[in-house]
Amino acid sequence: MNRTAMIRISCVISMLTAMGLTALGQEPRIERDRSIELGPDDKAAFAEPPAGFDVPRDGIPHGKLEMIEYESKTVGTTRNMQVYTPPGYSKDKKYPVLYLMHGIGGDETEWQRFAHPEILLDNLIADGKAVPMIVVMPNGRAQENDRAEGDVFASAPAFAKFEGDLLNDVIPAIEKRYSTLADPKHRALAGLSMGGGQTFNFGLSNLDTFAWLGAFSAAPNTQSPEELVPDSRTAKKQLELLMISCGNQDGLIRISQKMHRYLLENDVPHIWHVDENGHDATHWKNSLYHFVQQIFQ
Ligand code: FER
Image (cartoon, rainbow, N blue to C red):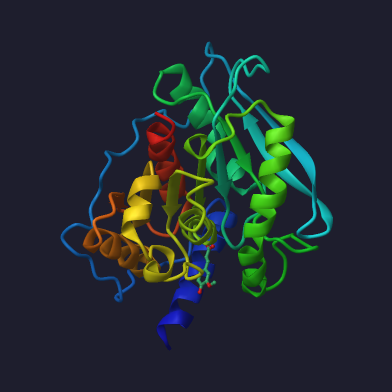
């Protein structure tokens, strides 16, 4: 079996696990991927999150989640996105915005279902460890039927098309409806797997829109580092933060390793965080926890 086929299969197994097979007590046995080769700097940049980081707390102010609609000229439909506004959100203040993208089997509800950004942020904001921010969770499959149905790999081109939807439809709709700080230093882009690839592709080629980037377990939709960062001086000047993370059990780690090594050789500062997880919700939740503490600070 070739490597792409193996990655596809291991990815489908991880997705099935994430989709609830574990909860049903049918966890598939996933053997360690022998194609993974770890280098000396493929190690953790952050400690494990503390116990309770993802448990809702009483006695602290809570933010709000809402599902909103927007008109997409790019797709030609009315689309949904989920939005977190921080505790005490007020039109009298202006907020930075994190655009957070899902994986190939996900949709606008995936982050909220698997990682509860609203709980992580309520807790971190209460502890003064994250800046109050708006988190937008759009649907990154820019096509008329944007449900994760059938062969989810067939929608890969729609994940590329989402660049137009994000820049021309999602961001203007958010900046019209909410009280935002509308400049690159107050916009972050992050995502898991396909969303991690989208973060590299859209983020690095639109540094005049986003200065804070986080790619977690980036998928093979990631364009080559040479294409995305042809001029390291510009990237260096415009980037506030680029965080790249991956689990050391993730069969897709080569993609992140390649980006990290290219950036290192070209002297582009970034955080490279490799933990002990696979292509899974634990890695994504933990990465989000670390990322939101770095941005807009
Ligand atoms: C692939 C393997 C995995 C691929 C995409 C993925 C586009 C995405 C996985 C995910 O989003 O979880 O070959 O090709």
